[in-house]
Image 1 (cartoon, rainbow, N blue to C red):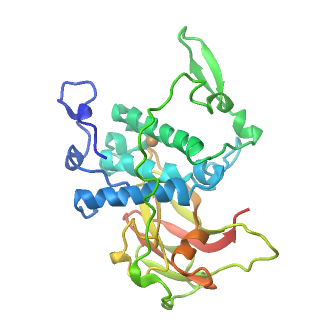
Image 2: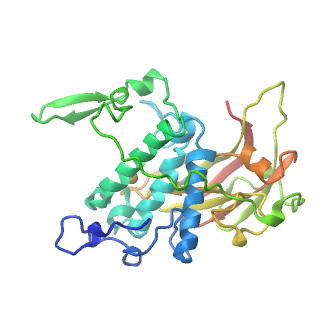
Image 3: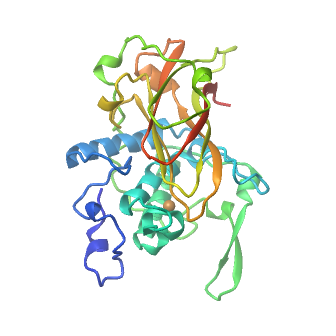
Length: 339
Ligand SMILES: [Cu+2]
């Protein structure tokens, strides 16, 4: 869980890049929920957090193709209104970028931490290959599936082949890595059993008082916000899961943005990524240009509430904690059933 030493073996080697965060060179252990201004913890503790984060993202929060890949974006859709990115794209993908580079003014970007310059650092290719490996693990070990929507299967990209001729490659041609001529080594996966645990005092504890979402939103997220959100009533025998939706997250794509989300947590300062109460985060990797965008963020909460002993509560406490100084506006929070 650190920058492999071969990427740091001397300024003249081709895998070296001087534009990495000097505090994060080996033997520093990566923080998969890193934000600028984070407090360093003991490497053993950080590894424990990282394993819980991976378990949450790959298993608890990634049950369907939409969870894993994100919501549809089709040709002709308004590019400033996005329906929500995939779980792995947000965490760990975005934080590996920002941890490796440094979060800076987008007018003075540093390689890995900014979208358009990330591939200037050779470690970018190892990072994205590892994301591809997560996909393979999700499909094979965790029995994930693909979208069946022809819009997705037939979407294509143009590449140049070995004769410098353009070729069209469809998404459906890339779904099986063995057909592309490569496989990943069968390594142990230490996060498979590393599920987050509730904080001991959380069980059977009544919720503190907090306003309804309607009284708070829309608002700028410049300080921690607590709201009590009503759970929807189940109609009929539906067994679908509840999804917490943070609606209409507005920010500038050129900015680094991050906020953390907790459920039924009365002390966010004592909560860590290996606690069930920590649902995860929303983050934006800065792009090279400015554009105001709006998106949503979803978390699966049915399993989480059972785990917290709050399966029969009719409402939940949701806490949003900003972890970046750039402006973010939130338009609402609701709970809906998985469709
Ligand atoms: Cu990336």
